[in-house]
Structures are given as structure tokens and as C-alpha cells.
Image (spheres, rainbow, N blue to C red):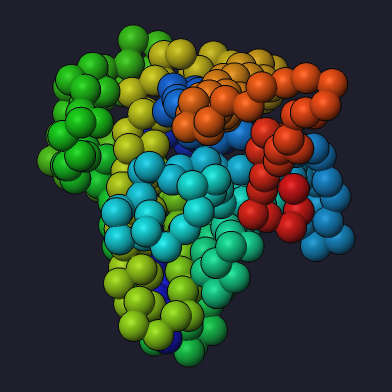
Length: 296
């Protein structure tokens, strides 16, 4: 049975404001979290058109995250590991899919819709009666749900932050019912890992990790409000492109450095062989990074 959760995240802004804040937050967060060859690498970011949903934006990303996984998962996967994210953004409706070809029975699908209310729509994503039976609803409160201690920053605490440009904040008890404006992100997440003996453990871990990411990301989108509040969609798309280029370069350099270190380690562990016209160098495998993924 696939574990299905619907996360509802309210934000002290309008749906149109959130669109700018979300794009800014994702671009900045991806850059700041990328280090040592791990992070979010953007492969594609282009406009698309759909017969039903109209004009949208398609993005494809590689999320390099081996060392961020728990040890019991790291033992099952190769060192060169990433998850592919494909997203179709027809704002205020989006579809996101996560896959890993090394683990073909693993997938995550997320449907999201944004509405100007405080989370009161009971079937925002139009789930079937069967899906509604399996669904668990989880409200995420950016002010009073606790982030991991190593992610906490006083300057990003919604209970303390006040936006100079919008006048919003700090958020107090009952803010979702009393503050205006308010909007809600409705996210239905299906996490699937069809491997006997590990399914429940992995699916629960994935849902927990997604919840942590959603909480931190939305806290930052609010706490960084003064950075993006006066941006237009053109402004934030330009910022997004700039940060994506910087993030890609950051990851590329780190991956190349890691590969060079591996090469040096291999060479130092091999006995030296004299080179002469009669003794050509032994043919060695290419040092080029090898991918486990069919689409590379």
C-alpha cells in the first residue's frame, strides 16, 4: 500500500505573492545547501504548453544527496547517486515527480494547488473516494512546528521576524485564522518503495524528510520576504537563472575535485612501473565519472 499524505502549509501572503517568494526561496536555498558535490543541479528549465493546464514551466533537476541519507540507505546505493526531479508548473497547479533508475521500485509523486484560504478546502486536488480513504492530512505550521536544531536561525524564526516591506509578522498563536492575507499550499504526496521488508520503513522516512523540507523551505520563504517582496515575475526568473548557473558551477567544480582525489588515491595505491619504449604504460580505465543512470 502506497503511503499517501496531504500536507497543508499556510502562509501569510497571497497566492500571487507566494509565486514570487517560492521561486526566490528555491533558487537561494538550492545554492546555499549545495556543497562538496551535493545539492541541486538544474538540467532543464523551459516554457511549455498543455492543452488542459495552459502555459507552464518545465524543470528537470538532479539532486545529489548521498551523504544526507541515513546509513542504512547509504549501504544500499552507489557512491555516485542522485535523484531526478521533474516538475510541471502550471501555477497555481503543479505536478512533481522524483525517480531513481538505480532503485526502479522507488518513486515520489506530488500534486500541489495553491488557494487564497487557510486550509479549509477538503478535497482541493480532486482525489477519488478510494484515495480519500487512504489520505492522511497533516497541517504544517511555519511558526510553531520545530525545525531541526542545526537549521534553526533566530533571524528566520517566524515568531520573531517582522517584514519591513510588508509589515507582516511576527506570527502569534492563531495566526492562520486571524491574519490577513493568508493562503494555503495543498500538497498530496504519494511515496512508493515496493521492496518487501523495507517498504514501510523507507516510505515513512521519505514522508518525514519531505515534511522537514517543506517546513524549512516555507519558513525561509517568509523570513526572506524583504528580499523578494517587490520583485516581478521577470525579476525572480532572472534571479533564478543566475542562482541556477552558480549552483551548477559549484556542484561541477566539487564533483571534479572529488574525482581528482579518487584518481590520486588510486595512483598512490598502485606499484610504480618503469616506463620505456619496450614497456608501454598499462591501459587504465578512464577517470571520467561513470553514471548509474540510463538518461545520463
